[in-house]
Structure formats: structure tokens, C-alpha cells
Length: 137
Image 1 (cartoon, rainbow, N blue to C red):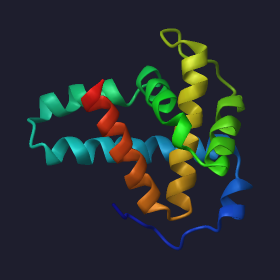
Image 2: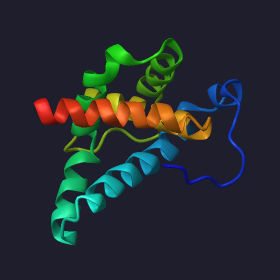
Image 3: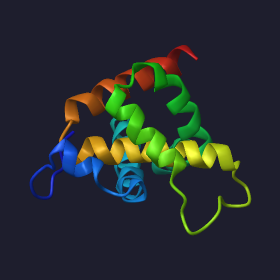
Image 4: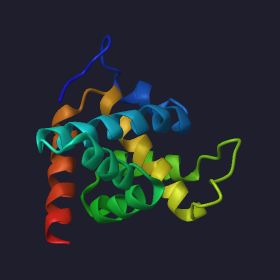
């Protein structure tokens, strides 16, 4: 998947960004990926919406991150750590576990970083791993 607005960033440039900025973008990237996968399954819109909501939330993102943690590179793990430790001006929503919310921020930061640096092949590798784990789990 390649949807690009302008040039990609060098890795060192993206690593200098605030982790919450990476997560802000990564949230949208992840949702776009999920919606793309769902629409390719040719589900009806109601089914797609329910499945999307179940995958684009802190609990699911924290679980997915747990499942891919072992295959992340050192740089990717660093981005996740920075995202996890970033403190937004607001706390986790009342219905969210704060630890899951922090992990989800790390997950989103990872996808923001990979998108900004044009690592589409790596995004595809992670998606393949995620879908494989979900099939078997």
C-alpha cells in the first residue's frame, strides 16, 4: 500500500519527531490498513464497521503489539518505547486500561514512523505477521 503526500523522511528525521506526532499519524495509517483489508474481504458496511472498531482500539492494538514485539528491529522497538512513554495532555479514556492505552500509543507511533520513512514493505511484513497470528489465535 502506498499513499504518499510528498517525499518520505529520512529515518533520523522521523526519529527526531515527537512520539505523539508519530502516533497521531500512525493511528490514521493503522485505520486505513484495517479498512483496506476489510473492504478487500467484500463485507457489507455494517460488518466492516464492527470489525474496524474491534481492531482500531487500545485493547486490540496493545494485544497486536504484544504479538509482534519479538520481530521488531531495535529502531522499531525504540519508537514503540518512546510512544509508550509519551504523555499526552489527557489521560486514558475512562473505559481504557492505562497500560493498554500507552502500548497502543507505541503501536501507533511505530506505524507513523514506518509510514513517514516510506517503509511500505516493512508495514506489509508486519501486517502479514499480524494476520497470521490472528488466524492461528
